[in-house]
Image (cartoon, rainbow, N blue to C red):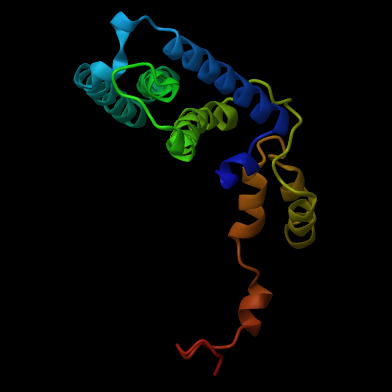
Length: 200
């Protein structure tokens, strides 16, 4: 998660966080206010069948996303929506068990367990949004660079200003160019390794 956040513009992280938080709160409220005829805690078997089918659909479109490049954004979108529906169905189930007026309910001593379950369900939905944050970056300005100033200075010092400036908008390509090559002078000064962790 930290690695994904490091490659994303901070306002974009906050925008997607608020979107996921709003959807999460919406399904919590819906789950708590469903009528007793729609008690999800009494229909866990039906819920399991629906979520299993959705998981199969999500796996299929994930494979399509990897192998069919023409369907790249749409296949991943279906994959993400399928998993999000699965998570939000369980969010509504947890909301009913936490509220406590249904067929199955949690005791007051299970507050920590309930909060951990909801937290991990939120992370499952939010983590999927990093594909859009990093790949498409709808809210990120075009002049935003993911490369730190120290990486740019290193690239300019060792490989020239052209490499440091090229691909600055894409971010990652600069750091790859800067650190992928090995300095020949450093190789010449390197000491042979004897396999024990200390130079000979």
